[in-house]
Image (tube, rainbow, N blue to C red; front, top):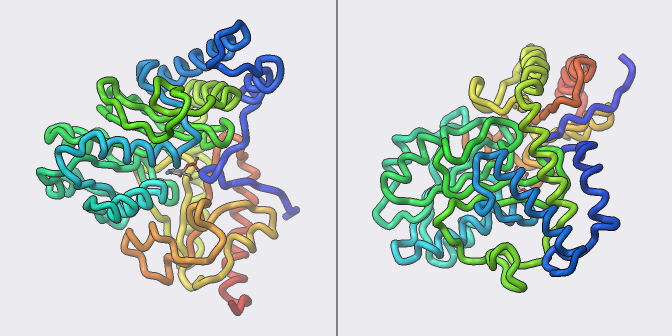
Length: 384
Ligand code: PLP
């Protein structure tokens, strides 16, 4: 088969949508003014900012004044967690999260542990799931925050946020969800789910990099994370990234509008890919077989200890990922797979393929011929 270039790392980041780029361009050019300025140009920039806020709020079932712009998923997670625990500091110092959160949550929780907080990391089952009963049992009188991701970035498992959130609220505990992998990819309505705080990041849904948002349910006022000029109602200082915010809003609206059609196409490709890859001896699907992100096809292969799957695939023109992109580089066992109870050896042999609507059946054909031959070559030839 002729060599192709196939990008299947859409959970790491996506290409900017044409519509988002087009919407952003004027804000790098003639609409360059600072949205805090009170002259005409400034008011134009401010209008674009507020229009974007409305689009984002609509896309997730929120109100305009519940959306705060940030620099991305990491900042939203850090701010949500720190802001929430400080807001509830009079009640206690106990936080509940899971073992499969992104490092933006895990490292924030670990930093808080050093500052005197206690954190319970709920263990997950072999599919990366936690149960409402597990969460109930972990709640204490001094629990102030529960943070559970909506969908996992590595294995694609979707968690039962509505049920978990209901448990938190019965005990008057704030609930945060990291929806960085979910927003724009699965249906998400903050009112139906009952969430207090939700993080998102534009570049995961074909918006630009370095911009995101935090949903903060009306009635909660988080302690500011960034101090300065008082933008975002004093909650998040710093001149807003107007082009980025405009691009994020357009990309999210586009993703939500086309979600059903995109799902049909993406799920058909993903399921054909999964069936084909699982014919490789010693291969396993990772994550929940049923409740998983539409574009996620993640695997673990036996006998791959420290063998460079991703770099070898890259030489064949396939751009995929082994663990979360943010911690890629070194060949370490996948922390997430270990958390699901996989052996260290299997956790070394992971491959994450994440599709979106720009992938094609021809891409899947190419993956289905190339991946099996690369795995078998690595198993027999590579003396790593
Ligand atoms: N949370 C999850 C689940 C992610 O997948 C990522 C990025 O991979 C982040 C948070 C961090 O987002 P960002 O890199 O945009 O700050």
